[in-house]
Amino acid sequence: MSDEPDGKPVRWLGTPEGLAQLREVDVVFAVDRATGKETLVFGRSLLQLIRNGYEGPSGPAYRVLRVPVDMETDELEVVRAACLVAKGSYDLQA
Image 1 (cartoon, rainbow, N blue to C red):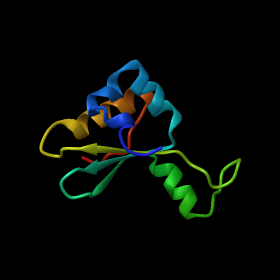
Image 2: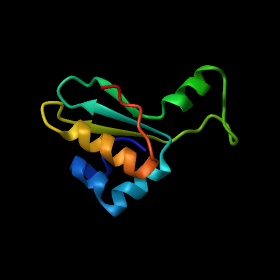
Image 3: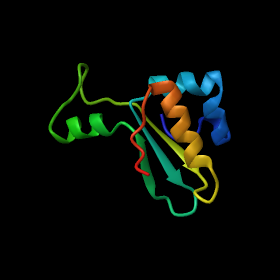
């Protein structure tokens, strides 16, 4: 998976469908629309395991969601809050 599904706005992540999609991914990045800089929002522990050689139960296939955000707005906070609801935690550093 990559980027917002079908170009939907970031707030879509707070809908039942958006939360369901978040529950199915392993890693979530917010991507600044202006610069392309990626910010890890969820999945730090998995990325650390992968860095140490972990391949998972079915090989090295992981689901990553890259969500384009406008860093000048509250969109990053929307992604963080959606991860908290869907995943129970987040890795975004303040």
